[in-house]
Length: 358
Image (cartoon, rainbow, N blue to C red; front, side):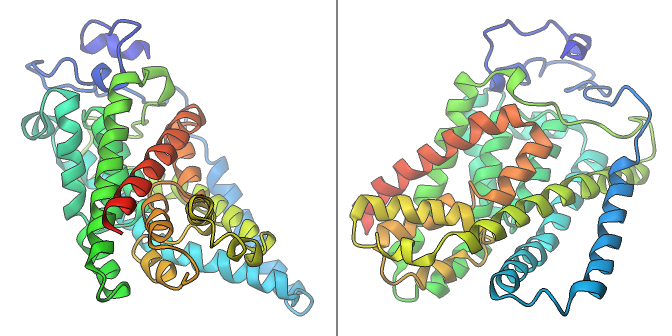
């Protein structure tokens, strides 16, 4: 990340990830990060666009030739799950990409410098609370977090927003209240556990994270271009990029859904600790959108309330399609560290809040 030197002295080798982008807030030019930070160095490649087009052609041809042959029960179940995940997530992904592009094009970096605390540790809970006002699912939160980092928000705060927004926004909490009618403790438990887990993960990342674990978001436009051109180019690029990883995540989730027998899950419902871990893993595998996961959780009648809470807390923070999106956006070195950390903290809060309220 040699480009960082253009905005001031490089951070020391031991600096945390949260501090590395929080320096230079007093820069009179407000260039945080510099306009050329993360920009690609070579000509644009259209291989991804052509590969996606060929994939669509192959699907159409396969449907025409093989639709009468692929009628097995397992394949139909796989296709149903894959289609449901993709169609359910796509509108929110487009919403998140549009919002991220708008942040990049129309909101100056100085705005975030004014509204966010300069100290990353103080910015983390503020970012978590901001997640309560943005209706969207986990797919939308990834491009939005990437856009926030592009505009100079400390990564620890942006990642806190990424975790909090899908779990505690008004739409999700209202859906949880409808699904668990007469059980307000489940809504309160989800709010407290999800917010607490997001903030703690943000604090840990601010303290221990390193700059080389997070691939800087690329800027795919001329910083001096008109704002509407910046918006269009950012949205088109991010849509093609994130859409491919959404498809990969949906394929993985559908495959595991078909392979893992549901009887294995039901067999451990009576084991208190194991059942919580199983439903947490179930949330990762199912990859249900956070707006709909409460209705899935309430249907798991064999499991304890704490296990259902773990399903609601873990799912919006860690699932297969989200892992794929994070890997494509921030890099797999980030995923290898961030996902286990998030999963562990989410489980701790699920056990703690579940034991106190449920």
